[in-house]
Image: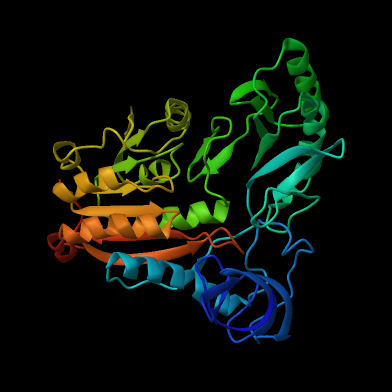
Length: 421
């Protein structure tokens, strides 16, 4: 049913919210203060037109905005956009009952997203590569994307060329492309086993497309050049398809906040370390114990440590921190603990930190909700949130990174006097 609505506020996913006769109505791409017409079904509204536009509305930079599901907020001017993202963190903390000062949003988009996952499907008999439409399983064909790095400009075309070889087998694919100093690093998922003939065809395609590396389900088919990624003082070759911060600027920003928080610490535990974006930087000023469940990521970290001069000792441990978190006797030997868990957060590990005597915890999170849940555990244990910083490396989306620094009261008094010996 078509209705005329007045938008009063923004939701956590960027939807405009209007008060309907039966409760809130969520209208994507609408802004507070706007009078809009929408096709309403239940609590969802599909924007049909803007009768009274907000002064905070701006033109989207991508012609696919509103159709492609990748971006939610290209229509927001910079100031209301940054307020909206900071408010996401504020609301999450309030919901968890955590009182903390939240800094203004830090823009960490930089040159753009350096990794992207394309979906590949057969559409009308042709290989189509793109992103999913908003709230839909329909595939939107992508030729270019304004939020990607210039190094990924050719990524849709190269992903489509690879998909053309594989989609006749009838399986939808995910094609992850990473921009590295050696060129494009591509890992293909969803195909299953490939026979020798198909693997040879993929290797030939990698050469023709001038890829740095091509992998299938993490199995390297060919590495023509090392797909190097700079992490502070080191050059790292991440495992195929492994996690990286979305933007290089985002990694630098998060690492700078972590480094600043750990100033004076002599021995640091870096939990959920991945390939070591924090560990490799922290090792310039402290001994580091890096813990990660993925053995391949730790191998990449160890190789980078061996090839980098000027670092203090870095030890590594392969360990599932969800099932076997570090316990208080293990934690108590550190001056600081840094943790950067997946979206689910690190509740089991945080509970052990709360029981320990470690004086400083630095939490890096890609989910404000689980960040706030874990923060509450630390606060209830007597640690105080001395800094919470939202970081924006997922421009135009509802995703926001958070860095929180938590200290025991005795540590706050000692701030500036170095860590424990």
